[in-house]
Amino acid sequence: MTHKSREAYKTIGEVVKILGLKTRRGKNLPTHTIRFWEKEFKQIKPKILSGNRRYYDEKNIKLIKKVHFLLKEQGMTINGVKKLLNNHEPLKLDENLNHSINANKLLDKIKNISDIVKKIKNIK
Image 1 (cartoon, rainbow, N blue to C red):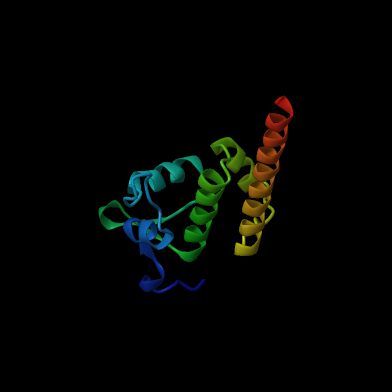
Image 2 (image 1 turned 90 degrees about the vertical axis):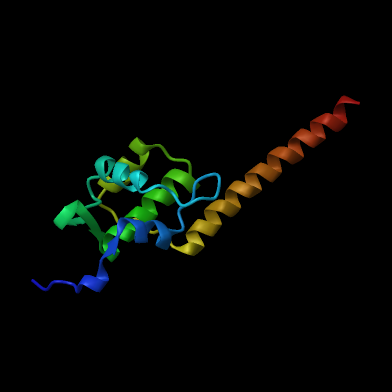
């Protein structure tokens, strides 16, 4: 079994920066959110070395990106994300898929607004 070099692993603070995770006020997302996700999603398994410092490899970082996308961008619940992750089928969340999902949501909202405007016009 080969081991990755230490450069391949990132600290929890570096993961926050890599993912660009922000609070609603635009500040970096606190690291406790990632630690909470570790407890909720057993698939996230950082290496814990001396001083209880966490180190994440590329696989874990990709998984955290998926969790973040599903929870924050798609509005899924923790239980919903757990079911997806436990499905054992690969999640394909590339940028094109992300954009098409967001575009479909936007088109649905535009249609709903259009329907409301038509109803308002008919009230006259």
